[in-house]
Image 1 (tube, rainbow, N blue to C red):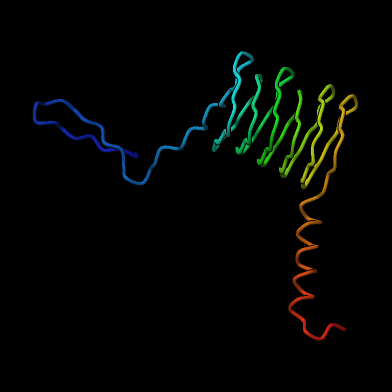
Image 2 (cartoon, rainbow, N blue to C red; image 1 turned 180 degrees about the vertical axis):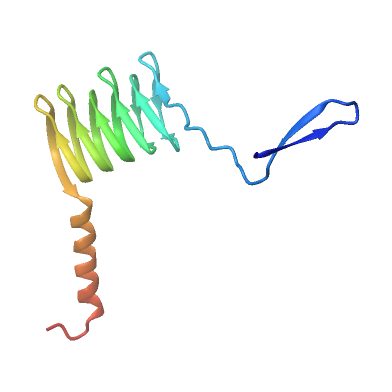
Length: 148
């Protein structure tokens, strides 16, 4: 129905897929910093990064998970951050989950933040929405030469 059968010059049949179908892109496997790996520098990924070792530097990815034995010293920028281990630094993510047993000393900018019982958190947390609203309010004041 979606393919055509052609005869090759040597008599073999070839099945040719129709041009309308495209193969779907397979999800990328996670990039893993294993427990025996120490990374000094930046880690950049379009997909998922799982840290069971240590990273001293910045991580930019779609999803970052710091495992129970994982440690990150630096900044994290992602859509979703899940921390089971240790984070020291700064994190900016749409969704942040600090799981029980995690130890976090960081400034966190987020849309949604969940801290489970047993997690240790020291630092500051701000919603991205609040930052955006503050910028637009300041911007409105600058644009209006005659404030009410």
